[in-house]
Length: 281
Image 1 (spheres, rainbow, N blue to C red):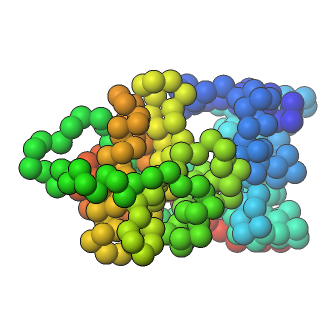
Image 2 (cartoon, helix red, strand yellow; image 1 turned 30 degrees about the vertical axis):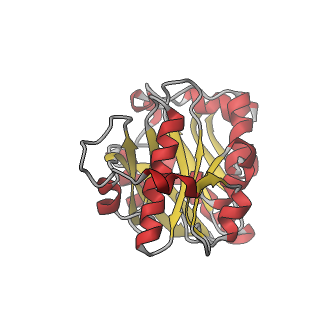
């Protein structure tokens, strides 16, 4: 673990200037919440100097390339390709065979590396943000106050049992991650007389003004379900105060962009989901 942390920080490039530093405590948090495995990580060395590092998270269905860095002085020498190929060869034996990576769109060299290694781009993941500014009167966000009584606290188990969270999300917000963070989650649900119509699972920000992350959102395919989602968002926004609501790395199949726009979210940075299958040497 110490070697991986040292290598990851040593191989920082100019594109990582705004990325928070990784220390052992942060690494252990990634282990707990994202299933980062030391056995799925690799370091490339020249002598004793780390010149490349790959951090991998592993679950039963896939391995995520969480981070891949090559030291700026050692780039374009094949280190990144070698790390990806070596991980794929290892997983061809040990499994799981599926590998994925969520690559920032603005990082053209990283995208080029995965493409050169014959990874395919499967979908686009978009960060969405809703500020606390009140929409104009008469907008579709105005809600009958009587519907507020249908909103109440729910647990992760209640949300999953409802079936509203079926389907895949980005690695950081998928069910295995939610289960590992269950004690930190705030759950809101909108109930009708028959069932749970909509639900939100969020994690409060670390300060009064930092964003509240929405880790999962689900609703029934009905007018009541969409109303429930709007009402739940309004309640979450009330609890968040001045903090914005953040929905990171949303795929089109998870929540439609037109719906998010209607709910006063604005699109932000994007990632490409790359994927491949492990291949033996």
